[in-house]
Image (cartoon, rainbow, N blue to C red; front, side, top):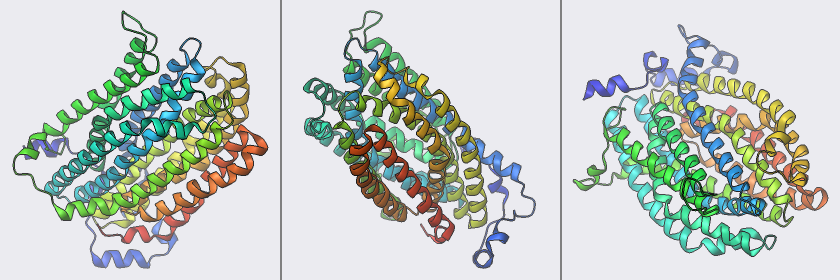
Length: 493
């Protein structure tokens, strides 16, 4: 079994780098910024870029396809006869409350990934296994709580989000969609925890496979259940929600098989929890140390986005439908930064686990370079072809015309927003989630809604996007300053 685990372990140049010690750490701390930019003897840029892309490309494929599946969801929902734009609004209403509960798992997973990456870098295989077990235990508890709370409070949450700007039919569809999502919340949470652990070891291919399969199942389910094909009933928004849950179930089954087989570094089975499994307070503490501030960050972000979304819903349709279509497209642009952040989180965590902060900095800076370059190309594409992409969602001329200036601004935002994703990933890999939570508090919960309160009345829909742009600029500046301070390299887990 040990040989099999070793064969399936993702190798990087970092495995060949000598371990650091206290003397080495002191020498690194005394170096100037110019000296820190020099690569270690024998290391080349091409080697670092190869390691980064080995982890990033499966994550990019996975995240892009997940985002595309979400876009197809929205397009198919928008294709419902007569009520297409209302259906888009209904699904969008349910999205933000749903993300509140998902943020609980995202926060947990930040701790799991960071702790597993440190264990992998330190060469402690059993510690990595135990970290995953503790992560799954917490995930089970969080998912049960989230599922029950989300289902019980689905109606008041949707009515709160509507803010009096949308009709009863739209809100009823939103409630139905959210209730189904909450019933399937357990599958989403557990699968994402397994994904976080695998990424911590550098293995992003396995999550790519099962998440891509899940997205395919989701799209097929949409085709069969939204408008009714091949003898299946036309369930509309309910069909879209059911299709999403079916896909999540498939992802969980495949993740359990991958983790339980012992062929992908880990060997953790569900049966382990029924045979004398115990809570490990030390490991749990490591997960919580990173996860709790991350939870605060995610909660702050969701609250800020909800407050902001309520400001936009007051504009009514078609402005809200236009906004949500553009937000859905923006989600696609986030995938680039998040994929590079996966590499950054993993490699920074493993580097610090091996007491090599110099390698952590080299990997992080090169992740940023790749992300900014690609984001510039992506931004140009959205600015030029934006209205044609929006036309895939809706054939309402008012929606298409209103989206043109928004898509141009979205294109301009690309090289601005990408660095904050990647550098935040580096900070998470180091275990620094407290300061990023504070930055989110400033930019998302305070700055964006306050600016929107002035710009939306003055500029309508564009005012909302001016506020989003200000938020992204402020976050990028603050995260960059935090990263350059270097304090993240001294955090102990």
